[in-house]
Length: 344
Image 1 (spheres, rainbow, N blue to C red):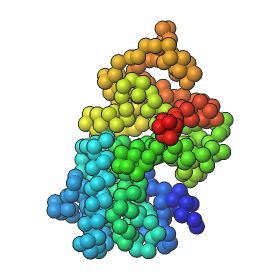
Image 2: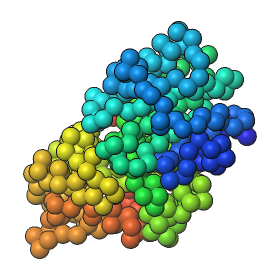
Image 3: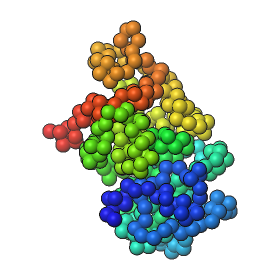
Image 4: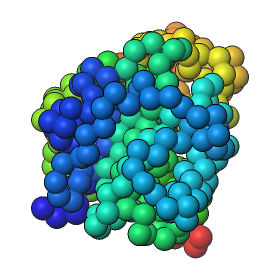
């Protein structure tokens, strides 16, 4: 199987076959799988005693396989630098994540597989991440890999219902590009999004409403289309936030401190985001905003203004109702100039 196909097939089946944990406890399986073979079975991970000496840079590191001191230092540096970027942009998180490390010698990339595991009460149950790594790769190669920032991004949101995993994966896919730009590994995020979506347009250009389509794609394990199709919602939401003088970075930072441990589902998450946005920003009343709102199909009051209280919930509702083909046609991503155009 090609590397591209491996990146976008699910690790869920392998995970269930291995007996590592149950489907109910696993959240947002990564889009990477092994090069060959099955994952090592590690029994009863959540009950193993944790040493305070393993807390590094706000992470609890648990080494499940043997790594040399040099390998541990390299992997730790990669995780700490990645987590620091996350913390600076959308954190800090109100908990200490547990990070489990496994060897995957012979893999043809630094991180062939990773996933989060967050079943149970999030106030009690540790937020876990599991990384399978090939420690033969150099630190710069680990740092340039997007897996860590993608998986760490998942922890900014609570564990969502299975029907809303498109939202969780869309968020992590959107955020990994933004964070890699911050780190210097992505030059033009908008070009990156367009490139990823280009190969999925045939799958996404359907008359079916966008959110039901993304849910269907997730159930069919068409992960690449579902992940980057989900990112479309966050890209469009970012244009709404910018129009109000905010950003996803600012909003998610506030969310960590005020609502992260309280919300239990997507409805609560969207409500919290809109509440924070309404408090932090002022309405912008102008003709251009009204015309844009009309074109986007957002509800307006008698004065032609979009309600400021439910901006993101209204955007979610539009994606729930409008055909995916129409959303793609009108999406602002296609109108954002690329970096080369901005430099001219």
